Length: 360
Image (tube, rainbow, N blue to C red; front, side, top):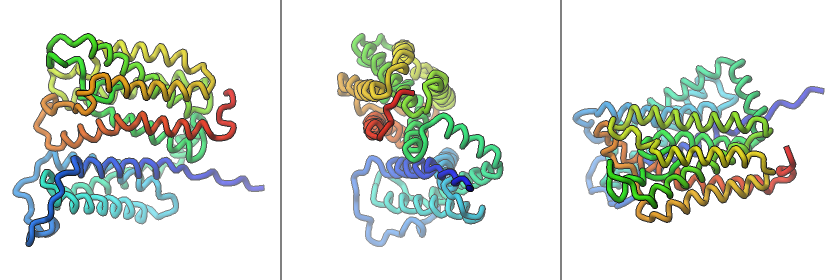
């Protein structure tokens, strides 16, 4: 009897969808004020070319759409290489075209053919990268084997991994401290370089610990076996710190580099790691409850300082007058605020699956 072929992973599909939603938000926020297009004004495709191209904007557009093209191409399983690349380019171009067209009705945004071309080029580069990686069947098989060996099977596991990847990606904003959802609280009320307020320091440390515990348990609940948890948690913490540190070195001014790992954050990471090392031995249903409590507590901690809930990292922290940083800050801050609630909903749905709570 011929064994059934393994089910195709839906992870690239989930990542493409989630990343497309992120592009939608970043392209249109703050979503106001919406105005009617001036009568007789040319559609942006037929408008004059911009007098100069800002190098950072072009590079930023390329980088922004490259993952989208990569995920779309990776989701194509039965197409020819030319067909796969074409789908990635068309998807990126149509998404960018829609965003640029909508930006014509937002006076705070600037629709441009240059943006459309650079976005489409980024999607094409992402599709080409996915094709290049797909030419190594042994490497793909090894990655698929690792995913099946370590994580829960099927669509549920793919969606959980996608949520975890999104959380890790938004750590690239170095203006938000490690394992946090908002800008540096100790700088208040005295401002940067001033003595931190004690209450804000305690809240920041608790927030960091709760967030680390919740994210760590989320990862633990996605794994097939308990013996993988300790190593996977260390990899996650190390990856988040590496992403945040590299982004800080590249994007932040030298005087602000240590903002992402202040003393309260460091203490919170230590406390959260200690709690996680004990929590991974609990039964899975108890881990779900504790993960939900920790993630929601991390949001509650921010509500204790209500003026910070909607705070974004000041653009002055960054090393350069980058036009896209306002969108960048808004997108990462929003994702980090929404992620705990989405993760809790996912875990409660996962806990309701038959036989899921059996001992490992």
